Image (cartoon, one colour):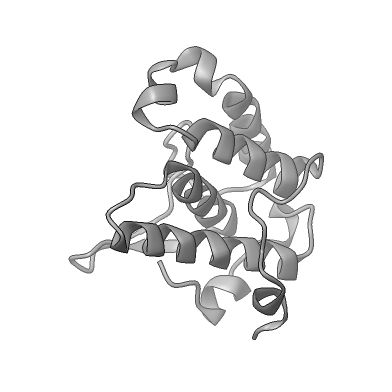
Length: 142
C-alpha cells in the first residue's frame, strides 16, 4: 500500500510511543520493501509483518487489488476494530506469545511473528530498535 499524506494525518496521537516522523519512515520502508520483494517473486513475511502492523496502528484504510477498501486488521488477533491504546497493548501481549500459540507460523510465514513483535515493541512499548533500518534519504525525504 502507498502511504499517503492522508494516512499520516489519520494516525491517532495516542497510538505511538515514537515520533510520527520515525514511525512513518519505517512504515514507508516496510511497504516499499514488501512491494520490491513481491516484484522479484519473493514473499517477505518480515517486511509484510512490519507493514501490516504499522497499517493497523495507524488506523489505515487498506485497498485490495480490486479496489475494495477496509480498515486494517490487527496482525495477531485479526480484530477489525480500529487500534486504540488498550487494543494495542492487548495485541502486543498476544504477539509476545504468537509463535508459542501458532508454531506453524515459524515455517509457514518465516519472519512474520518477529516482525509483529519488533514493530509493537518499538512503536508501542519503545523497548527496542526500529524493526527495519531506514535509509538516511528516506528519513529526510518528504
